[in-house]
Length: 307
Image 1 (tube, one colour):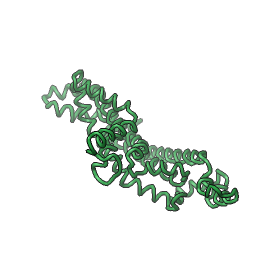
Image 2 (cartoon, rainbow, N blue to C red):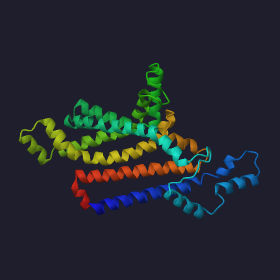
Image 3 (tube, rainbow, N blue to C red):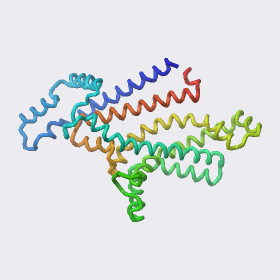
Image 4 (cartoon, rainbow, N blue to C red):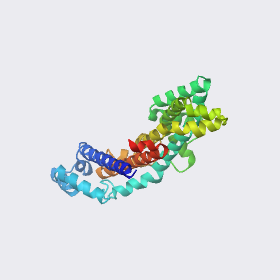
């Protein structure tokens, strides 16, 4: 068990290192931030001075080495635009705004998917099954930004402001962005629960449980669902990564003051420290969630440790 966990932990570290490395080199392909920061009438000498001030005149390998050493110390430097610590700005936007939005969407997509998937599987071929599959296909096919705009038009415009179109501060502000963010993962989870349930409902141990006279609800939720939930558990971890990356678009559509919107605003200004700190935090969360999912997987199915 320890070797398994150590292996997974090292994998998580490699993932985070790979993400920050790719971002470090990608952001430097977007152009020179010194040219953005100085006045449009600045001379070449003034641009060179700003570049030296930011340390951008040094060889790229030296910048990369300093960048990794700084990350080890938890130092991502100061925002080029605001002159505030980049990591502090990222954490301020991560909590509570992005965390609350992602948690609400994750809960909605997971908790609603279980009963919907079970009902679809246990009523296979019925109107409930067909309706569930059609709705899942629709939600998975719709681009998140388009769905968000449609929800705004319906609930904020057609219904006379039933729900706010943008901003934060109350539960009503959270509903539309959370529903938009949860739509595609919810549809995916419903399909997974349905297919998992259909597979296990034909197993011998389910027939044995029924033959012993157990109530149908107990057979489904205590015996069948436990095994059918394994793929859902894996996808839920991946869904959180999807939600964090999808939050960049959703937060922009709904003007939600989260980390994704901060990164979007940092890109035009080539605010390297903020972009790198934001992507690093996303990478750590994504790798951490997958590590937890691996641990939970071994609890639900001990045979995984042997793999």
